[in-house]
Image (cartoon, rainbow, N blue to C red):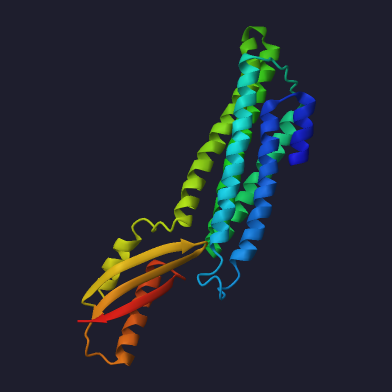
Length: 273
């Protein structure tokens, strides 16, 4: 897709298609980064990484976001240059539409596959890629609209101003990509700085407090490391319980929490009252 878009973009002079070519090139880099990151993050915890390697996924997503922001900056600069300083004639051909239509079909298929796999394995890296490719569909549609406007401007002289639609479409692509980058970047940074999942503490507090034998639940902590959610909490229990009974109670608490957050790594610290 990158090669096809680059060739057609250079032959026709379409900035919109060249913007999509740059986007597809980053998709390739991002996919390779995600592949490597998922392989590394899947490794079990070891002596130097006690919480596993899940943060590699978040780091990969952050690098991908930075690359996309840089690309958007170049596209915006080039589009502004064409609109106000240096006019470029865009030649709209059958191949202009064909390559973008092909891109849409491919992006829809891979977005769906990635989305299903991300949900199955609770992978934030794959979820980010799925969201990324989903917005590619919209950006490609914007480029096709821009090319159609350019062609209409050629056919109807009174609508000659539509010939600038290609550069405007490139700005539209950039706006979509920047929006996705902002959403992805914010989530990635939240994961890297160990931000707690929204509403998780309140849900755990309500669920654990309802467990028979638990007098109080406090010091709840939750954070993501890649696809894995780690949860720690303290509970007040009857100090006269035997070690066996206290352990059985913590097992019950862990089961209750995993109904809220399946596959979470839960650590319960019982305290006597």
